[in-house]
Image (cartoon, rainbow, N blue to C red; front, side, top):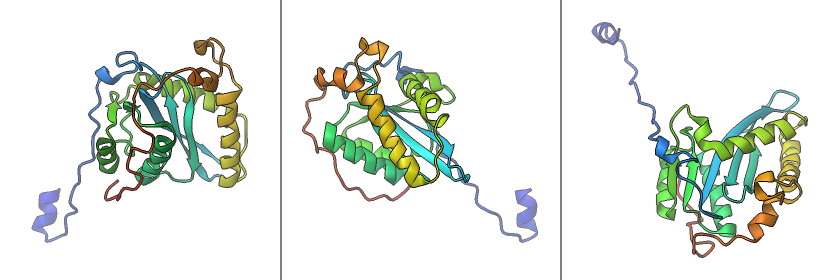
Length: 213
């Protein structure tokens, strides 16, 4: 078809290749296990809608060892630069994790994020494409988010979703006991755990020029 177009003098659109993930089973949560607080964070996206049909997108970040939901951001759109801004805030408050685990979503494999993680000294653990169970801690949290929050509440607006999301995160971290933590809350458990990475908070670059997503 492209040869026929060229022969007739028609403009041929350049075909571009999509960036493809390079994840593997060695990065699965049951293979590369978290050794302590701030060793491995897991992140993902979850989607829902307001009552008038506006799509909402949540960025979830979980500490795999403490089960803390360290970030839960919602907006109509979350791009690579928004993800980096959230990570900068987290690192300024908590320190730098050793690893961050994700699937091969376009935001996570974006060049800008890869470059930022490398500059910050965080190793990206990409799981195999089509294998969400390899990012099991994130999937477990997302399931709770869906069952206990998104399927229960209605959001009249983005602002409404932001406020309700903050309260869900607080309840999850400070009130809800977890059987895997001997029925402590994530915050209670985390308070007794040293960080496995002896890095000063704020060590990551807090500004970064976004050139590609």
